[in-house]
Image (spheres, protein in one colour):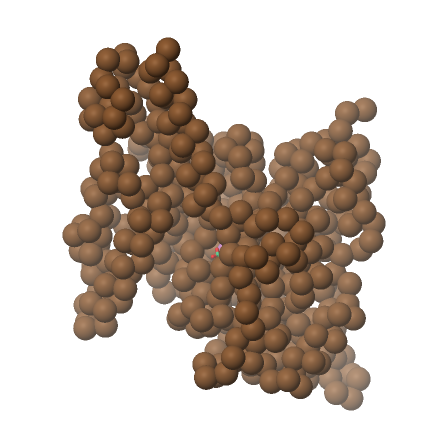
Length: 453
Ligand code: OOG
Ligand code: NI
């Protein structure tokens, strides 16, 4: 019998996790239904234009999840499980000093890197690891107890990890092993019925709700799952119309007339979920926790480092102007219109967005990219942004935490960077802009080759 490839394993895992999350968080199922309705509306309205940033099949199946783990050792295990699904770490996000609310974690996203793999199934998981060593959040005593607690638990069974390693070594798994692997992998991210130690959880929650969610329990769980929509404003309004309370706003760029860039996200508020608690006297009681939610996103064009710098400057300007009063979204639209080119072609020619190139005319237009594009001989096609935004991530974290926590910016943070994370994972964490740049460059080389022949 043939092997199930990493790609097939990833598609099956994404579907299973989605089914599991739907049983655990029913509002997520509503979100998926509404997302599909929105996508069908956009398709009916815009035709094939709607699919410029991803086929409707891809977008319909598309999800990202988020998980949070407690230590480098746990992160390395996550890397092995996702490695079996053809997902590589990409991007380093330090959320410890990001506004609106710092969170004591650093993160990466596991995702397929190649375009055809993304097209086959783009499932990705935003993965955060706690930094108990960071003195801005934890004192030495709490750090020590937190590390001991995390070191004593096992998130992933040995059989899961050894099947993951085998899948990586052999390029996939036989059907029976695949079934075991997928059941164990999905199970590892299910909400555990194990009682939560109330005193310990609350002590951590006073420092950070995320620290409690990670280090206050003996298991991990998927924290949200995010479908992709082609019109997030429609989605937001449609969810509210169904009576689902959404967070205050859509994070990221505003809606405007020009090209959509990067990523816009919003979510419904975390819901109370019944959990069991163990009290100091040993009694087990019913209670609830509010940590899991449903998020939705719309993806736009990937920005070059120059484009990203402009984006960050625009955000700062929006902050400054909005602070003086006025509707934030209106301010943002005005700032966007002032600074960002209104067409994809200009975004490309000003070096602000990443594009691939398609030769449509004959080869007489010269070899200069701008000339070729302006003459219509070469058509730039946008590369979709496949990654995350630290500030939106911090916004998503913040809007779904019950408690704000405490943070002392005068204390020292433990150094963490992309190299640190690469060491932990035993593989180089990819830099998103390098991945896009390589794809763009390869396509430009191909156009030049065809022009020369
Ligand atoms: C991760 C939040 C970040 C996103 O889409 O930016 C994230 C978390 O809540 O654990 O998923
Ligand atoms: Ni998310």
